[in-house]
Image (cartoon, rainbow, N blue to C red; front, side, top):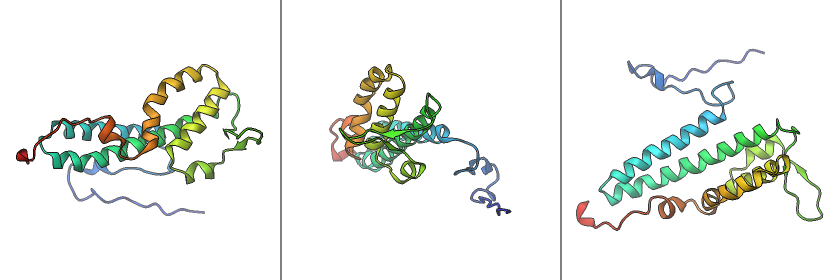
Length: 171
């Protein structure tokens, strides 16, 4: 069965910009780590712009895209790391069972359908610590950074940027 190749022509007619066409999806490469790094790098770049801005409005405009990029980057990193864990000791990954319940095997469908970082973090913690006890200490240290992101999409404006009070006379 031949699949029709779909070309992305977004930058085709802009000389010198064709390198910005992106390959996204299940096409072999680039992989999830590449995408995750891109979201995190975008957040850092936007954060640098926000911190240099004298405009409160500019800061407010950027905090949400920064937050989205960090949250989505973390989600993709956790999916990537979960996939990598499947190469250690067992290909099967599980959700942590409630006391007295049987383990639930994580399916590809479960991994695709959720975007809840708190769930991915719980899955990663459980599976990494089951495979190697040394992850317990590492994961406890990472909790400080991951858990605030799981709580609220607005975490960034309060946790990372901590903008100094500004007056509206600079707008």
